Length: 134
Image 1: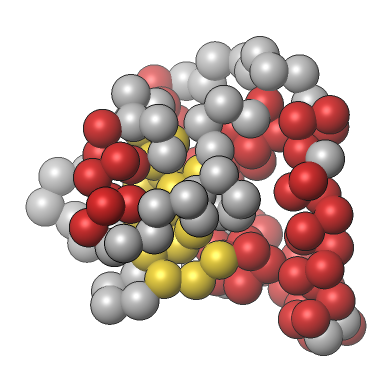
Image 2 (image 1 turned 90 degrees about the horizontal axis):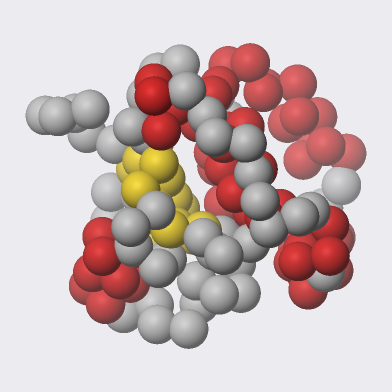
């Protein structure tokens, strides 16, 4: 992914549910638009400090775009709209107002550690290069 412009996605690297979701996004990111970064990694810590978003990464997924960031359901759909295979999920965004989607996101986020085991399957090398955990 050298010399490519990509957007960073910062996620809770200690959350099994979050890791599975990120692996799913990375597997389907055929355009290699994103670099997925754990908030516990050195790169994640540097980005959090640079963007002055300390404390936010433990509460939500963060999509860092060119000159701004988005969080919660906005970030999820910001990722989905750039992954062709996942475009059908955008129907959800059309059916429900963002306030409701963020409310649901909040409920899931608070219970995310209960939704999946901490352990995840190890993805192939082509997927792992898109995910920074350390």
